[in-house]
Amino acid sequence: MTVLETPRLSLVPFNDSHLAGLAELNSDPEVMRYIGAGLPFTVAESQAMIDRVKARWIEHGYSWWAVLRKSDGMLIGAATLQPLEGVTGAAPEIGWRFRRDSWGQGYATEAARRVVAYAQQLRIPQLLAVAHPDNTASTAVMQRLGMRYRGIETHYKVPCATYEIEI
Image (cartoon, rainbow, N blue to C red; front, side, top):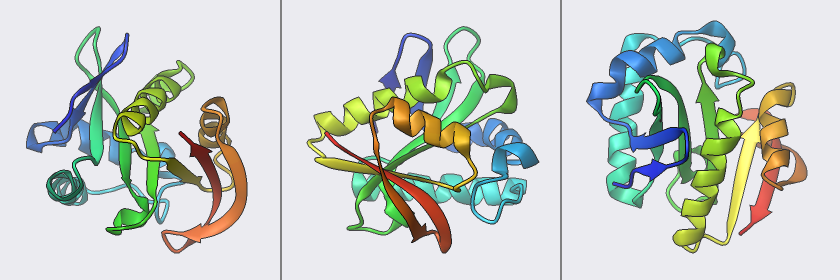
C-alpha cells in the first residue's frame, strides 16, 4: 500500500488506527451533505468503510487514503483513487472529503493533484470525478485539476456532475 506525500500532507492508506478521525469527519452533517444519502455516518459505518477500503487496497492496489496534516498529524480528510462506485472494472475515479475547519485552505486540491500524479505513475489513462450538482466546492477542485465537465450522469444511484481528465 502506497503512502503519498505533498508539501503539507501525508496520504496514508486507511487502516483501523484511523477510525476515530474518520468517524469524526464522517459524523459532520455539513461534510456529508453531498455524499451518498447526505447523512452523517455512525462509527460502525465508518468502520465498515475502513473494512471495505482495506479489501480494495488488496484487490486494486489503490483505494482511500487518510489525509494527515504534516504540521500536527491530524486526520483532516480523505482522498481516493478507486473504481467508480467501487465496482471492479469500472473507470477509475478520484474523490475527497475534508473536515469543515480545513475547507478553503487548498488541501483538497493539493491532495487531489497528488492522487492524479499517482494515477499517472500507474499509467491510468483517464480519471473521472463525480459530485452532487450543488457541490460547487468540489466541482471547483475538479476544474482546478483541469478536468472537463461531461454533464449530469447517474452514479451511486443519484444524479452527479461528472468530470473527466486524460492523463
